[in-house]
Amino acid sequence: MRVNSRSTRKTSLYLTMIWFLAIGYFQTINQSSGQIVEERDYVEFKGKVLGADTNKGLNFANIALNESNISVIANSEGDFLLKVSKSDLNKSITISYLGYQNKVIALSDFDTLNNTFVLTESVVSLPEINVISKNPNSIIASLMKNRDKNSFQKSVILQGFYRESIKKRRTYASLSEAVVEVYRKPYVANSKSSVKLHKLRKSTNYNKIDTLVIKLQGGPYNTLNIDITQNNEMFFNDDIFEYYSFTFDKAIRIDNRTAYVVSFKPNGYVSIPLFYGKLYIDAETYGLSKAHFSLNLDDQKKASRYFVKKKPAKAEVLPIKADYKVEYRINNGKWMYNYSRIELSFKINWTKKIFNSVYSITIEKAITDWRVNSENKNLKGKERLRSDVILNDQATGFADSDFWGKYNVIEPDKSIENAIKKINRQINRN
Image (tube, rainbow, N blue to C red):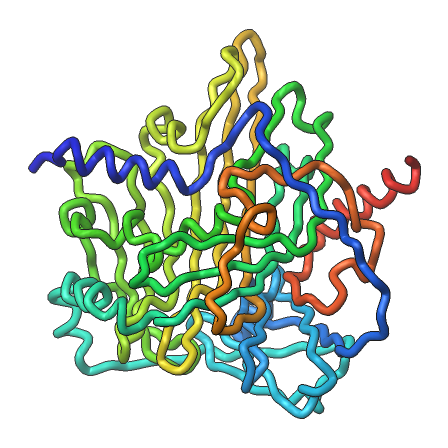
């Protein structure tokens, strides 16, 4: 069975829109902190989430303040920092992680500095597994059928933390962090989200990137574009069963709810690079809880067209890794975008050079709070960040330990902490 050219062009277009690895000059955005020192009206709680079976940090565990819309994501080492208003100190938090039992802890039981929480694995046994496994396509069809019902039917404003980094092999060459607001319309409105930038800090050392000037185009829009429930042209479209085959994997527990795990891969006759991975679908609502997937890079040259906008004539840029993760959080029976992460690696071969260069790029966004946009406010003019923006290369705020103030952010990994220390030393020398 052949894929028609019209569908192929459409699929390629939306894969390209995920983001670009751009080399050259584009419009840049910088936002100074303009921070006013005020008396703190919040309390910080630090902690680490471990798995009982491994005694290792559970990367990207979710920490949510109960009876609120506030949440934060642990870093890749399981560490988190949660900032809570003093008026909410009588509440509790819920810590959750894929395949583990939730843990609820009262804030009154917290030590503000040293907290270690151990989650135990959850085991689920469903008698109807054999029935489901015979027809995984019906699970996907139910997900698509219930998508409107599972989505918020009101405009919302999401507050989030965004981080992007570029490494040459093991050395950081660029680090950007920002607090943003995302103005999102209901799914049925079929309109694009817009982004407002609150605070930004970024530093780039182009000496670490040789003569290749790498610019990431899209900024915070990069992570929003892989929200596959909102951006249905990327994956959940009318052609999905033509392009992909599905198999039932297993059932697990996520946030004390049963979820079906469905694996997918491109059909053998599809000639363009597509995705493969796993979908985690809530058994009760058929809402998408998580999606972990990768881009097929068997044809590296063809796949590189999705990422490279411009490059030097003497350089060949080949993707060697393209992994994606998007997670959702249920609230009053509705599923909302909560976290996404993109991990990419590229090998750059230079003509007349013996050794190649390898660059790793990580882009992530975590939603830390949200509210209904009751006034249907829209971003206009300079308030709205352009979708093709490149964040400016200024090291504003890295030397300020209180730069983020009351905003919840993702704790930096130790490697990022070391990079920030180097940036601070450079700032002090200057």
